[in-house]
Amino acid sequence: MSKCSVAGVTIQGAVCAVPKTQIGNDSFVGRFDEKTITDVSALTGVTTRHIARPDQTTGDLCLAAAEQLLDTLQWPRDSVDALIFVSQTPDQRMPATACILHGKLGLAHHCQAFDVGLGCSGYVYGLWLVSALMNAGLRRIILLAGDTSSRMIDPQDRSTAMLFGDAGSATAFEYAPDAPTAYFDLGTDGTGAQYLTVPGGGFRPTDPQDTKPDTLRMDGSAVFGFTIGTVPAIIRGILAQADRQIDDVDFFALHQANRFILQHITKKLKIPAGRLPINIDQFGNTSSASIPLLFCTTLAEELTTSPRTVLMSGFGVGLSWGCALFSNVQLRCASVIHV
Image (tube, rainbow, N blue to C red; front, side, top):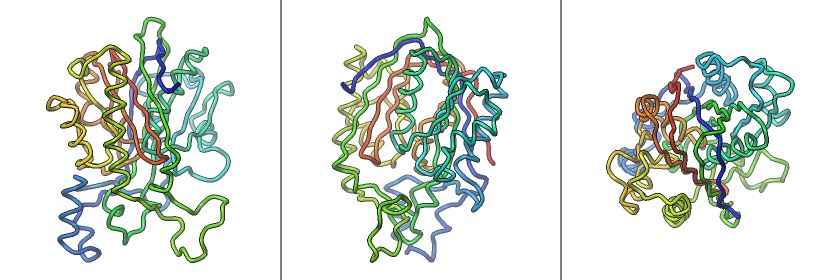
């Protein structure tokens, strides 16, 4: 059963880290013609994005975010029971990046550390794992989520080169027995795996005729059809599961796939103005980091000043999707650092 609910989980704070290098759409002049740049920008909504340095990894970004988060919350390092790293761009094949970061953060030996290889839906899946672990007895967990998607982009592919940005995040969770019930709905359609894929980098041989096996391939129309056909339905479903209405939700924090998709969902669900924030213009599509980036930018003031009801939804590569509904969300910190 994809629908489930858990209680006792609180979100304590979030920090996001983005590379200092920022590029605007003017950097694509000469690579693409002016009409292409204008059309892609109008569709996606992306005007700038942050790009990692050649020596900068997803692990580096998440490490910086986690250090800042732990220091701000003043959590002793030995109080963290689990470290989860969600990414499709790990630092290396082995060991798990979570294990590497566990050592760099100086966490205790009792602390679990593991990777989750998901992208667009990854943050919500991470939330579900956190919730399950807390209901199994863990008390403090750090969820890291991010990607350096620029490493997988074909610079000549207009459908992806202008869309993606790099970012990492760290979110802190703590068990509280009186925390309200959180609701989840997760799902997968593996028959659509080919719509978002990087053929190379694994152990299955690639087509010898493929000269760029390590670059991202995206069927934009298929992904759009999947998103529009799936996301509104799961949002309606989780609201029904929680016996809530659209107006009961303060903010809809959705994966920042592209502006057109987000506007379409807003219109289809008749979400009131201002409740589905969009920041893809500043950061591009940052994969699993896009939801926490909303917490740390557009929603930072609202989520740190008073309790809010927040619906989160991630969707894309897999094809995979997840939706979560949390009540009384009030963060002790929410910030962005540039590294």
